[in-house]
Image (cartoon, rainbow over all chains, first blue to last red; front, top):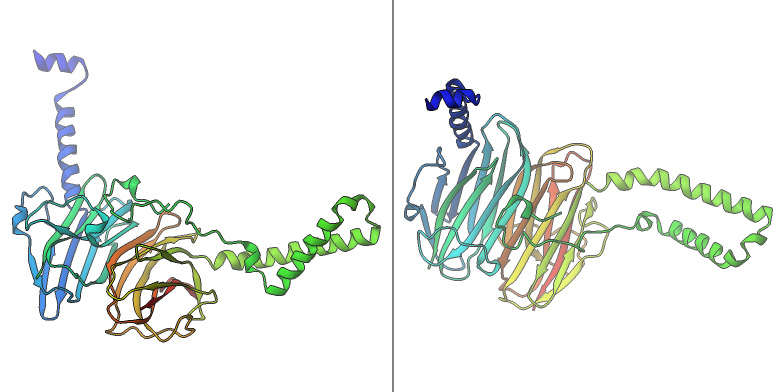
Length: 168
Length: 225
């Protein structure tokens, strides 16, 4: 009865299936827009991470990779963002920051300028295989916990790779 | 222009709009000094004679027209080179909380450019903020795989005309590799830092491999007391 009523409105079952398929395939495409890699190193210490292949993967934030260093030591952050989807992406935003947080596992806080040790942002077009990378030095003076996060913002979906920096 | 607010990005310091800070270059500054003088005297001559403009004789009119023609041709000849020279726009700042020094675009070679640099005096160990924005100003095409290099390194003196080496004693440094699309291609960095050792330092951001016979940079001298 219901199906017959919808058919009268032109909403056929094949159209519904096609619509659902488009949503599912669309979300799968978005899942593979960017590959992110992030590394932090200081002397012989090294920590690396990547973004999850599926951005919808539920990952407890308490399990971020962590690197511990002494205050005022010089660290090097290296990251790379590679676009792996097929449709070209215009004016995508790549955002990287190191921000002080209250405790390990805390969700990304609002970026108050005085809490942000380092921040970079860039916009560029991506086609499949295009990449951008950076290498930056930081020297945290104050002890505490910092969130180091790399984001690539595509068509409605943000890919992110993150770790924590503990300064003692 | 250097505002990421349209992307919905929660960019802390980088989201601050730079209204009024956009570098405005006077075309007059591009002319050689001698030519600037003659242009000025040319204008001055007409300004003085303006009330009596109706009384100009034929010879004066012809001289004026010739001068105007020479000026127009010279402008046309110089215009392409001045446009070509501007592949990137920069806004570099060092902020000590009391004052802010700015660095704007210059050309390399010569390695240290031709324009004087602003100088900022700071105290050793005090918190400082280094920030720059670099935009593509090349109207024709995307410039691919451009290197963006920034650093703060010790220098010998204020206004130094040779490029100081970049070694392990760099206060901070970083490097990007990215494509710059006309108008919207841009990168920005904001970083807190401090300098413990008194002396003179050079803060600089520069382009690398920009598919040109010259590169661009912006720089500021820092004097740590």
